[in-house]
Length: 273
Image 1 (tube, rainbow, N blue to C red):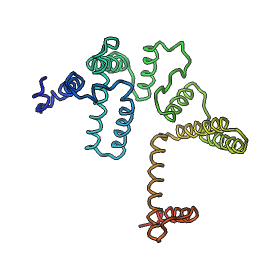
Image 2 (cartoon, rainbow, N blue to C red):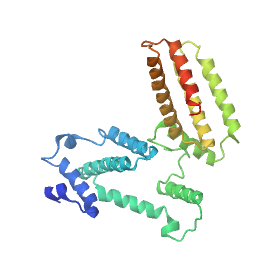
Image 3 (tube, one colour):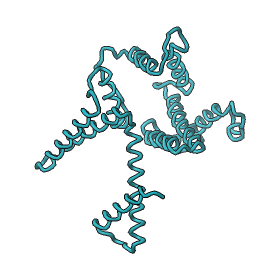
Image 4 (cartoon, helix red, strand yellow):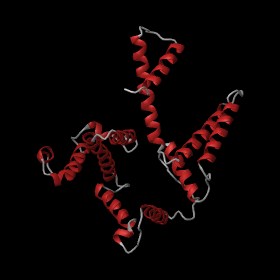
């Protein structure tokens, strides 16, 4: 595809090929200096950021924004594949990536592309995990080996605990998790007054957070979504608190004044309109 086609092509079925050609052009001699100097490692933050922006568009139910953000995620895929194609030791391109994906989808859906009989979503997930373990020759490895590797740690905790639960290592009910949560909180409180206890406090806070994630799992709550909502709620209340203080003519509020305004905002949130 030449420059004219890259600039002017509007044919829908050629847009993926157009994007691949543009990415190649940007990295080629005479292309973009910034794009040309990037490495797999240097654009990792971009990949993370674009994924989270895509998730934000989904939560906001903003389909126009989602289309744009999915394009930005695709850009990162094209970027990494183009860099791999340039490197003889990596030696794959975007078409190899697509083939790998297609082969995997066929292989892991024997109930669609083969003779296996699976009638519900849970059965599909179980079969998917079985095939995945076979592919990676992980039968002889520890059960939690590489589980959730690369995920944010709270999501990795969710995957680790879910896998352990599948093997029968779990609390019998939500109350058991709540009891453990109280126990971990007490251990944090006991550790805080100790001298030179930073490492111990960090350990106990980690246990507390891990148990909180398990409570999310038992209640079928996604910790990422729950934390996102908590962040949004706190930010909204904090700004409302500042607005209230400004309306009261308080420019440099004390901690007591902020707490009073905060509580007033909370009460007003629950007042009927």
